[in-house]
Image 1 (cartoon, rainbow, N blue to C red):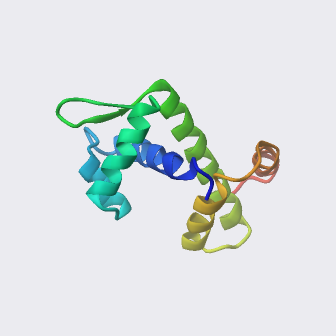
Image 2 (cartoon, rainbow, N blue to C red):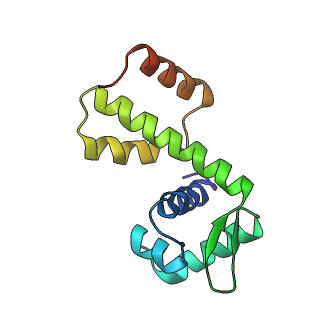
Length: 124
């Protein structure tokens, strides 16, 4: 795991939760990811210090511009890689798990090639 993988996972999860919840709090992230609240608190402190999130006095977590850009990049990679693996016959659960592992380490060149391949061979 490279140093930013955990941060990327948290940012991606905040993005995903923000699409379904009116506000995102640390407890929501902990429950969703199955982590201890204390671990999430440390991660949120690090993300806040890196200026990837803001946290209100009420504990509501919002992605900053940089945090949102990272989250959207990782989310897109996750979606595309999952679709690619599923199209090749990998079952959905395995494809999702593998996408989580690959999304952080795949080069931009390889990711662009996968996206291009999928445009030429649409997944139905």
